[in-house]
Structure formats: structure tokens, C-alpha cells
Image (cartoon, rainbow, N blue to C red; front, top):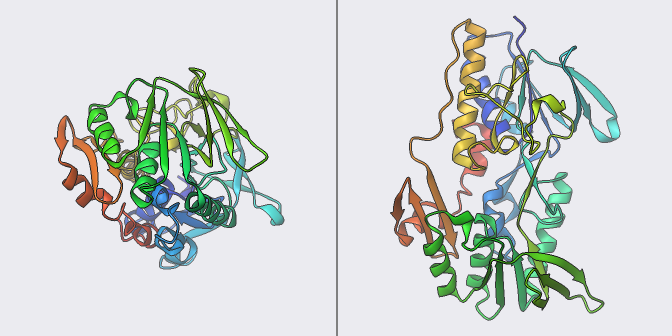
Length: 372
């Protein structure tokens, strides 16, 4: 059995699979080769993007780090890193076509293929995800931080965890800035059981909340402001409009039979792509049961383990999520709202576990593999 594993995506899921295979499988499968393909040369701890848009608060290297140095620790020939974007998969020949930019196209042959290409924010101009190159990400981060610092009135569309945390961070940093959070639903964070606590914490900070309406139009005005039209007819003229709603899976290059009706990758309980042989998927590209770092890490561990079992000729194992479903929202830099399973977590505990650093200490651990 061949042992070339091509991993597409250099973010949370892709790095987790890559390092696990190289740390724990390669020592007993010496002919294993892992090829990691990432459109960004750097890893981005995007969970802290909500705080990174506050000017002069976070240094770039706290949340962004180069991927290549962390792979140099492994035996020569066991790993290859390619900066590029996958553009096509040929199932019959088990090949992936990759656009490497100035260097043109290359074709990679795989024995196992891991899809960890994630999902982009619906509006790629904002740095909630690393939608493009390293330079494009830095430009987006710095531009957004400059705009936030200059604004006196901000409208945030989308009241999922990203929108909620962005609203809290901005209002905490700039208590005199008007911050309006627009939620299409009748409650925040998708109606999760912590919605009431989230709303109370935001209102404590002075965030204005519009529920049950959508931002239907956002039109730039000649004076640099933006006119935002809500679905109930209200018009807001704002210094800065920040859309945070919606994810678009990075699956356009994949065979349509691998995708569900929402164009996410369809997987079974072992994280194998349905209808495909030796193809696996993790993270936001499947968003099952929801997009979350704790689910992505559990899935990555399961995929690395099952590929290892395939090499050994042993039965595969079901990939289970975390023992407890945790959902924590940081609200500014001192409070939060969350739950462990159905049990509410006190605000101060959410701050201690998440809000204090937003996990930025994991940036270096992801790129050097010490996370696992």
C-alpha cells in the first residue's frame, strides 16, 4: 500500500493531521511522506482576529507564524510543504492539481487525501479567516484595525460568535464608540442556550442590539461612510460596516458527488468522504456538527489515527467529538458567557479559560507541533 498523504489546508485541521502523522505514524512507517498544501505560507490563529482588529493591542507574530520551520524537525524526505491552492482533483488517477502562482501548476499523486481547506467568510475583505496569501491577510488585519480606531459609529452584521465577540472587543476598547449588532434571528448566537447571557453581557458594555432583522444593503457613500439598510426598513449611516455572517466552504475544486446540498463535504463516522476511497475531511469544510476548533481537533486526531490504522491493516474507529460540548463567547477583555454541555459557565471563568488570551499561546504550538 502506498504511503503518500496529501493534506490540503494549512490551518487548524490540516496542521493537526500533518504533525500527528509525522510525530506518531512516520516513526513506524518510514516510507510515509506527507505533502502539506496551503494557500497561505503562514498559520493564522483566527480565533483571536476579533481582538486583533483593535489597534495596537496584538502583535502580528502573536497570531501569525510561518509553517515551514515547524516541519524541518522531521526526517528528510518525510514531508513537503507547498504554498498554493488546489484547483482540481482527479479521482481516477488519484491526483490533485495545485496552482502555485508564479511557479505555475503542479500535479500531486496521493494514496490518501485529507481535505482541510476550511471555509471563508462570506465577505473575504475582513480578517475573520485567512482567505488569501500572507500579505493579503496582513493588509486586511491592519486596514480593519485602522478603520476601527478611526470610527465613532460601527454596525456589525451577524450575531454568531464572531459578531458577538467583535462587538464586545470594540465596545470594551472604545466605550464612546456607538456599536450596533444586527441579528437576523430573534436571539443571538443561533438561539443557543447561552443567548440570554450573551445579550446581557453585551448590553452591560453598551452594545446596541437589533434582533430579527437583516442587513440587506450596505452602500458606500461619497464621504467615506456607509448606508446600511435593514430588512425592517431602518437605515443606518455608519463610519464602519463589519459583516461577520456566513461561511462559504472551500470546495469548488472538488467532485460534486463528494458534496452535500450545501456544498460541504459529506463524511461518514470515520471521517471518510462518502463515495471516495482513502479520502478524508476535517474541520470547517464539513462543519459537522458545527464549525468549532474543539470539533476540528477531535476530527483531525481521528483522521490521523484511522490513516495509521489503514497502514497497519487494522479496522477503522469511529471518530467522536469532544467529551463535553463547550461553547464559550468572550465579551470584551474581562467577561464572557458560555456553557459546558448544558451547564452554564460563570462569566469570570469564561474570561479565565478563553477571554484572557483568546488562545494566542497556541499559535506557536500549532506550527511547531508541540500542541500534540
